[in-house]
Length: 284
Image: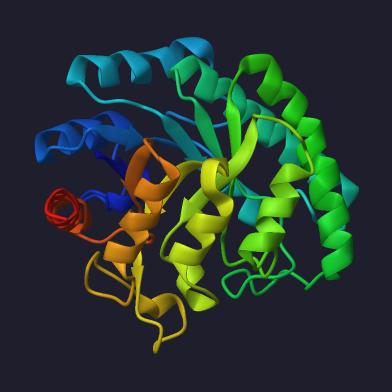
């Protein structure tokens, strides 16, 4: 089991500033993680403006620490969506994704997390809900555009199931992915996100080989909102069933713990929970 941690799990320092990605990687290594998921932010060491030299500094540090960098995440599409009604915003969203793909290539990552767009989102209240069919059309157009860059660089686009009120069933997600007929389009499966409207073990079985990467989160269904996300093994996810399905489809990629917003001790607690999960799997 490749145990990974996402950069967003690390809270700001005592000065209120985001922790530097280099320091986050050192902490991850010391905690015993095998891999690390850097994120591209609006500004900072890794941003759309990052050049090859800056990205390779991160890559070299990870290599010295013995950490894999298999995936790269970016949440900028929540504020600049590829399915926004404004074509200028859609254009900027595509350019950002192309920048993330380039950065991932420089980092040596195989896959980026891709947000396909949104109908609406509870945590983006200023965004006007968009017609589902129009969002679907724009999502297809945007992904086709950035796919050309992905194929050129050899970096995969993994569509994540997120709270965007779009692609709400595993069958719809499967068919959306298959419509591009490309080995560079697949799923970034988030175990906790799907709990609001489904069962992760069902999604895993249906998506199968399309799953390129996995986010591990846990969720209490009765809460039913953002407050429902809890520590791994403290929620309602049936991880025994989840890992049975991952084993059945032959998934060999990283399992990356994600925590947004970050809290003190999140990375420490997550790695302990993942070791318990690993023991559970080995004991079956």
